[in-house]
Length: 111
Length: 114
Image (cartoon, rainbow over all chains, first blue to last red; front, side, top):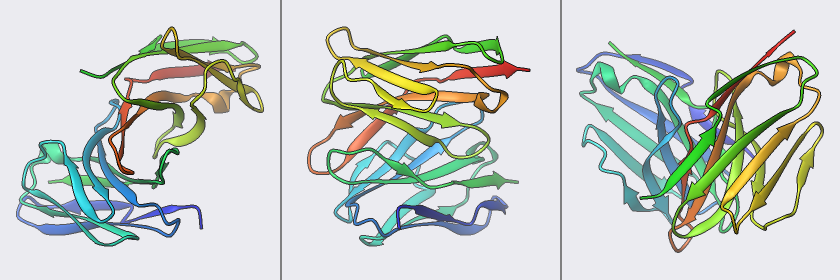
């Protein structure tokens, strides 16, 4: 299995909703990442988990809450989002000293 | 501040043309440079370059890294309409342990007309 699987692929949520994005990999990668990509912009790093511990938080607002329940799973919990948070959310994983593998992303729309 | 600069930002060519996309970087803790192709969905991995001067090839695409001059190029020969996409250059920065941060350039939008 050489994939990073993200669910759901599309999500529409209201500003008062609570939802979660899920990411799974079975490649034994010990680093997992969340990126956010707005239209016509490159991906921007949000969080890095290394060995299931949060190692980088790029000053992301608290309405985004990451969780790494085990070495294969990464969640992003969403609460009280704003319309400007609408974007493509990408999960990725990497082993030591090698390239990233991106998931196919969750396209999030906040209404 | 780590910087990755791609040029040109957009490019329109005809099928069969050869294109060269550029990526320069100024970063600390360089580990490797990656090229991605992005159409409407998530970025698709093309190449990872770690050593200077070694060309990587995949079909009509090739890429090379110059660690002394801090740049990389991506070449596409005999372009096809299916090559139309945004090409992203990203530098992998070593953060210690296994958490490596990718810093992206703004991308080059390539349009190949029939």
